[in-house]
Amino acid sequence: MRIGILTGGGDCPGLNAVIRSAVRACEVTYDSTVIGFRNAWAGVMDNDYEVLDVDRCRGILPLGGTILGTSRDQPFAHPDGLHKVRKAYDRHGLDAIIAVGGDGSMGVVKDLHENDFPVVGVPKTIDNDISLTEMTFGFQTAVQICTDAIDRLHTTAESHHRVLVVEVMGRHVGHIAIWSGIAGGAAMTIVPEEPFDIQELCERITRRHGQGRYATIVVVAEGALPKTGTFTMPEPEIDQYGHQVLGGIGSIIAREIQGRTGIECRMTALGHIQRGGSPVAFDRVLATRFGVAAVEAALDSAWGQMVALQYGEIVRVPIADAIGRLKVVEGDLLRINTMFRPRIPGDHHPGQRPEDVED
Ligand code: F6P
Image 1: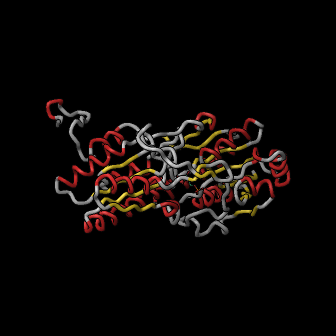
Image 2: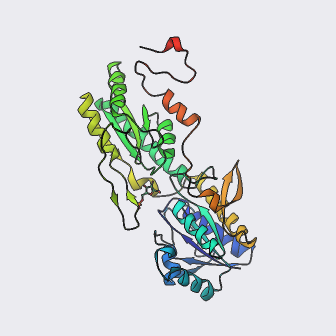
Image 3: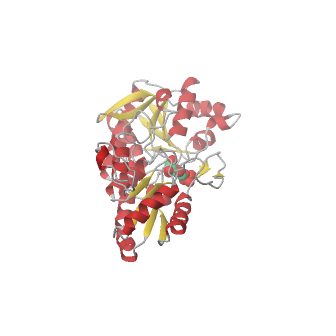
């Protein structure tokens, strides 16, 4: 078989592990060839590629980023895009393309599949928000980076008796925020799933500091939003692909906290540090499993399918079922987040006896 591979959307630790794994599976086990397209679909349309073999992929397993480069460009954004993709299949004699990407890239794979292109998807995002897979690679690395940062921020926050707001990635969902907030022992974590009330947040901080706790870490996901009517957010910037450029909520919250509580507050935005560098072991293993599974899906002509992790096993799911609905934070993680925040009068926690509610 001749298989094309590309990495699209925002980069993420583990992309090189997928590429390496797909190449090894093809060359060593399945007597197949891999063509790597540079900068996602842009490379397919512009015929920018390299033939990948085991030698080329030596040493890339622990490497962050993607040796192929990435972009958010896609064929449906160009009038002749589909024609160019068809030409790429013909020119290279491709039997399949494996596209590694997030929700947007999986949408392109679905549309190409509906146009009869032989395509397979591999889900990728540090946000961990793709449905039908329990985990995407890159997520655990991002959580570890945030947790390490929070650990460091504790000591400086405590020395200065400050509130420290830590802004982490999470465009629509708060998986990174909740996981790193719990792992790092943050006093409060604010996620897009639960719009926040700034006044209530400040009351919790004031009460905590009044009770002799002289430092507070607040983790906030970049996509967090205030409860309707509490305060107005500035209009977000939009990039060339119509994608909102997020980041900034941490500064807004920090300013409000200092203004409303009088307690000194600082903000740290972790930004793209969360996406850079070497993947943790879990992500390397998951990415390796996904790479092999994607090649095997192509060998089985499982077009329009995405590889996924379910109950610890690698499975295939129709991409059409996975996209368009995000996997949000829910269940015990949200409950723990509520249970562990500093209390204020009137709080009632799940499992708490009504007579113990403070007034
Ligand atoms: O979707 C993954 C992600 O890392 C989001 O958490 C973040 O909002 C976005 O990508 C940032 O994209 P860019 O690198 O284009 O600024």
